Image (tube, rainbow over all chains, first blue to last red; front, side, top):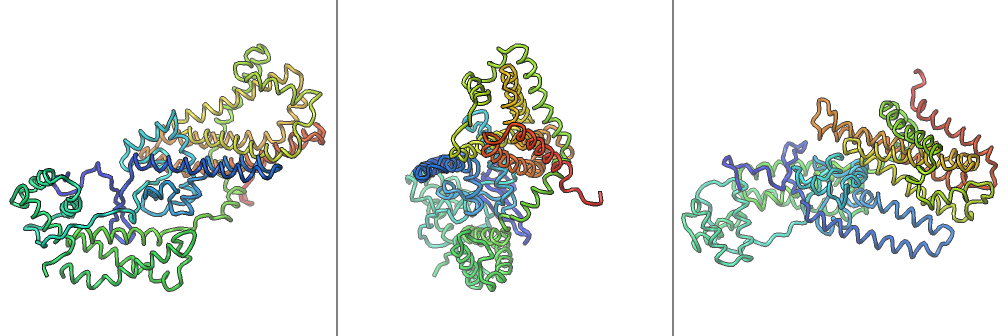
Length: 237
Length: 327
């Protein structure tokens, strides 16, 4: 939904950061669901690391138990810190889901910030089953858990990770009026997803764009596709 | 200029930046560290980044299309990321910090540290006194199997507590257990200090109850010669982690001129040094507890003397460390 002034509304999974170069970059913040699956994966991976450690250290019966306890301690508190630091903000679970931890200003996460957000995971866990963290993610502007709030970090979708379908071929046609960037975005994404909808649904959606296309139903779908084709830079030969 | 001309003119430059970014990513295990790039590429990076930022602004303003905008936004993000990445682990600073900066931070927070001490020590003494008067009270806090093992561990017939080869296992156990307590105490302080107060008071009560049990058994010598050695670093570590947690909670209660969110960020940054120092203390305590406190070769009187010296060392470090010579 666009607000009347053409700006995007607040309840949107986007964070804008201004760089020293004076341009705004757009980060797509990650919500509770991908983060849950990332955490679940990391939990499993940690389990296998412990298992591997147990097998490895059982060979050393003097130092073995001590090393295993130190491994548990490191895994419990510093597994995410190590990966966020050395794998550019990504634990294996986050990497699999295409998520990254960044500072609020879009710069890579540093040691103090990573330690803070991960020590405070315990606060997020309370009173049980990560309730505090989940509530915090749901009510804060950039989907921050308590650790993110305190550390000034944010979890985003990696800019590399986005999968896009190509805009289907159609004779390019310039829209009759200049469109704002979010409006252009909406049209291109409509075309990208066209193939995944039943035709009735596509016609229904396209009919909403009647003020722009001057048509409804199939005619509107076709016209929107031509606009999209033009918007991604295709031109009539 | 229309979009086609624009793209034709600058596509080569974007490809260069793209190549540089992938190169940086492939080059090192610490993906993207700019120190790993060849000199020439490193010198080109700011220039390419500025150019792409400029192009991104133009594409937005001229509405050249969302796909191009997204490509340039992605490029600029990755370049920004690489350009503004910092050295990750400042090792020398960390060591200097524990020696000097940490005690300074402790003194800056002395009110909260005193509060944390009070919240741990007062319940400990009350529980000790109450436990002496009414031994049943001890059982409400200390599980029966722990109470039972106290006699074995600290009674006159107590032998060496365990075979020497398990000392290291105990070290691992103490690190995990005690640092875990410190971290939980700190983190739960976020809830307006409540969690930190709870963990401090609970640990105080537990220690007081154990001390009462020991007194009623009459095993003071064995017990206090055991705890005095590592107690200095361990209890101080827990107290400082508690003070750090109280700092978090206080920032939400009394944010001053900042918004609560901002106050929390500032307080978290400022409390981290306390947690770091506390962790170092707890690891030192674990070394002492695992390899010295339980040693059967060392006479209790020597343990008491060394333990006293360690308490003085902790006090001296926190009170005097990092003061300038002139002061």
